Image (cartoon, rainbow, N blue to C red):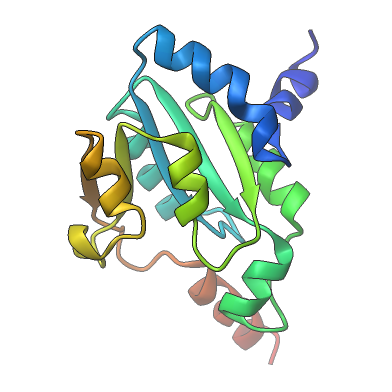
Length: 166
């Protein structure tokens, strides 16, 4: 299989298509790690966060906001990169096993579907306030928070580009 095909096969547009892989991983007792986000302009902060999250288990699943849900969260001028471009870039990371797009306001239903062993978000959240906390705790899983790298955000990169063109 060609490298681009391998990358594309990691991207799931309908969560039901993920069911087979998730069942195989659970059967093999893989530790499934889940995180979610917009990942509009992937930068060093995202890469380190995702790599650290992936190291907590054996399979890494990212819930990726659709373009429509990013607009609701971030405003009419976002996302900068469309959902397929964002998914393709994230799927190209060797430590990422699956990207599932979701359009709901929160990834709650997706987390319930994936049933991860470890739920990861940034340390700007308190564990008990993370969407899906109840689902993961009920199955005996873990909720982890990871620190962000100071000075790296999509918003700050966009602002820097805008300010440099003035």
